[in-house]
Image (cartoon, rainbow, N blue to C red; front, top):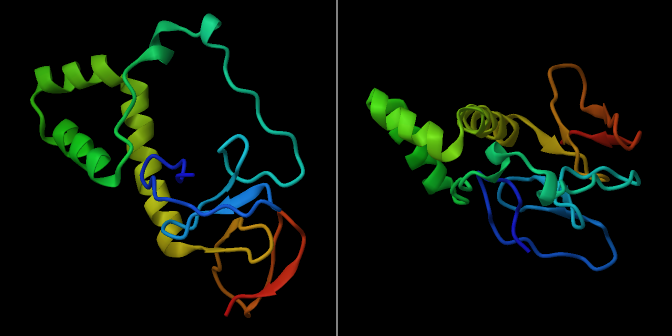
Length: 144
């Protein structure tokens, strides 16, 4: 299986005994069934019904690789007004904005957090001692 993050897409090895998987490249922990952020014992979110989807939901999919997204964002940032309008029509203005936001968010999470050793939730340490408490699985662990 591949990492579902649009900014990563790396191959992930699954364990048959666990519904969770963790990307070794970007440390994203996700549910094997729904491909969303790992949600523990909670039920998976339902997939949207394509028969009731709006036209803006059916736009061209964004590139899956890090290089593809970087090229798209650079093209949009440095493009002329007609070029930006073309990209907005092709991918959707909201989706481009969301992609930029998620790209920088994912990069920040990858560089500033560590996954909980029990449930893989990203944890950010902003001070104090090395004894940490995961708010997702309610377990203690040592930051080091």
